[in-house]
Amino acid sequence: MNANKGLTRVDAIIAVAFVALVLAQAAVLNAGGRERSKREVCLANLRMLTAAWKAYADDNAGKLVNGATPSEGDTTFCVQCPDCPTGTPYISKAKVNKTNTAAGHMNELPWVGGAFYGMGTQLPECAAKCAIESGALYKYVQDSDIYRCPTGNKGEYITYTFVDAMNGMPGDGDCGRGKTALKNINQITKTATQIVFIDEGKVTPDSFAVYYNQENWWDPPPVRHSGGVCVSFADGHSAFHKWKSQETIAIGSGSSYYYSLTTCAGKNDLYWMQIGCWGQLGYTPSCPVNID
Image (cartoon, rainbow, N blue to C red; front, side, top):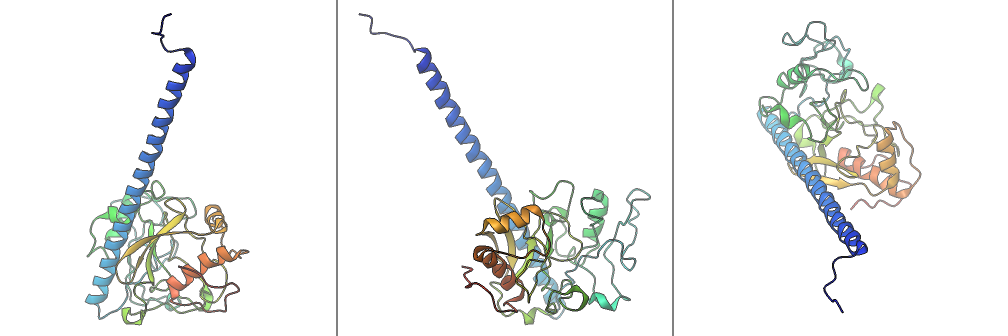
């Protein structure tokens, strides 16, 4: 009897399938490793921008930098950058606002100039770099790559923004956030948990809008880096926060504005962001607060 048999067709199929499975698993692990690496770059960028934010405050008697990126179309801010192609619309340098008192930033140079031009419309690279290089924080962070998450929207160069509370858009009046933004670093009482920058993954027209006194999202929650968001805090550290609720992920993925929540898990994601922005909730929550 011949005991020296070769591989049968079934054996060969099983062997090929096994190799394919191993290669697929390796590809998944490699992709996961690439994503983690990009997330770490994002977190490092946030730490450097927050260090610049703190340095600005140190150099200006504790005053917080203007965290509201000028919206395009505001003629008090729009200044053509001479190095960009002629006729490119709204190429905005950062510019001190001396006329519009309603903006809440009289005589405050914004941290970057305007790089937002309509939903889904991107400005050329020269315009975005002009916005960065003319901003108040460029003195401290002179590498334009730091202003962008490596997984941000393609073609956009400023993907981080301040939350409203950190001298962003005014929180009361016509803007309706429900609370006035902070103006001095000494007003921040919970430095380890109050958010400064957030990774939206895209350019924004002002600052990240968060209600203080309503149990609703204003801006949709960014869904980044596999179902969470990267932020930095006033003590200088940065962290990745994983969203707890599929409702939150659905809202963020769908870019729904002014969204009313239906689940307690979703509401706790909102509570986390509101407390991170404002330091506390400005209303009585309808669900037990569990944001650990």
